[in-house]
Length: 196
Image (cartoon, rainbow, N blue to C red; front, side, top):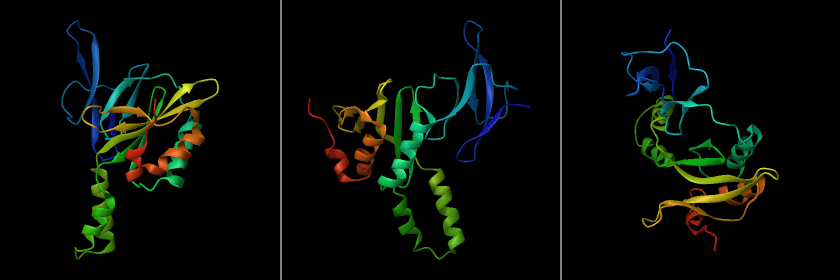
């Protein structure tokens, strides 16, 4: 039975095997059912779905961020952030918050003018939310593994920068989440930066 994975958009991905120029096996997911399909995940690999629902096979990374720390960010977003459409991802020492590029409230306002049942509107909103694209907006980087201190950063969208910038000093994850996630989706987000 081929390895398949259904992403958050409901798309089935199939694991394929290819070969490098030197003849070594390489693996990739594709929406195509045809080709050299694989029956099992190779040892030391895992399926990874990124915040924009692309599916990859990757080497299992070392676990530097605990489940409890991920939960702190999820709880902090629910309690302190005003944005509704977001995703949280972990890469190495960073916990990254992605925000939807589209405004789901705008979709709600548009649908109020269409004559349809509440169930039909809910189905349309579900489909639209599945198609949303997410951009990285804020991250907390583990800077002190012993004391578990995290360095807060936000993404800067100025053409001359287009990179992560520091918005504060390392602190406990609970403190940086409470201090900074409330700015997501607001004008105050763009005022966050740290003087050197």
